[in-house]
Length: 231
Image 1: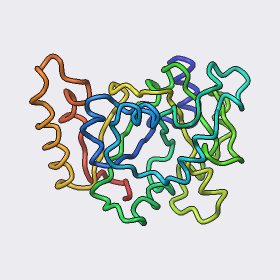
Image 2: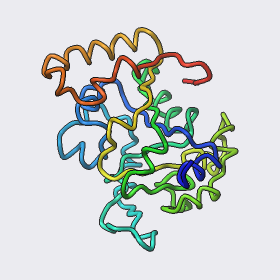
Image 3: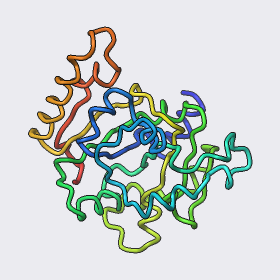
């Protein structure tokens, strides 16, 4: 077992998570998970589940300003694909459902943490990246700075501090390759059928050998109603 595996294993980090809307699945199956800036530039965002006030705030935050050896200080948070350490019960999911999105429209990507952290330029935080109280890191030894009790075990976050800590992030520059995906999770069998129908329509545009990785592997990684996952 290598150094990366040992450091992630020390804190039980095997998977990372990203949530999106079902309506965005077509473009994700084609292009992988993209940063907001890149997806907007390519005209690929169909349904936006993010709070627009938060987006404006994230546009003004540059991780490179807080990191001594960041390669690109001009990148705002919108130039990164945001992932969570927390599997479920994040404040973002609560707000999305509270504001009217049916849980059947939410898609959760489960990603291989080792593959993600092997990518160039990955940054992680000890809380919501949009908060002024949050710190940014590139050295995996700093995983000890995160509150793992809140991230992994607390199902209800009532204070502002616990909400911030629960949403500790991993930030991947620009694009997350499809090969990092371990599973794509939806709420129930009906949602699974909807996603499969989207994929079948998309497959018509590709020869078998030219399919994007996520589309090619979809049937083997698509899951629904996983035990222990709260929606």
